[in-house]
Length: 122
Image 1 (cartoon, one colour):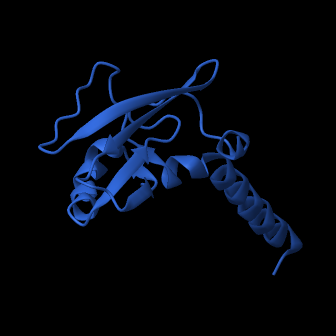
Image 2 (cartoon, rainbow, N blue to C red; image 1 turned 30 degrees about the vertical axis):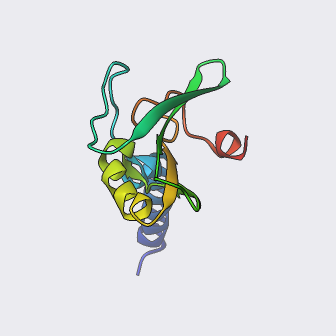
């Protein structure tokens, strides 16, 4: 095999790896964005909360209430959608006596800001 073809194959492989590295978040994170005036509608008690973390970053959360709670479940949804689609899961916990707190990550749902490792750690 000619050395030129080997070098072309290596260069193509490296190029593909670099491109995938820079666009990987588009494949991994699939946020559902909601308008700020979106109204959550559930048939069980909850309250919507907002946390201003830093300028330009506002985290949206829902707090679901159980009667006579035994404790609190902090629920972190996956890498898709927003808390709108996960709110119905809270019933499994509230019916068993646990309050549930869930939030949308930066850039998901009504939360603002950009996802970053530094942002997650802060």
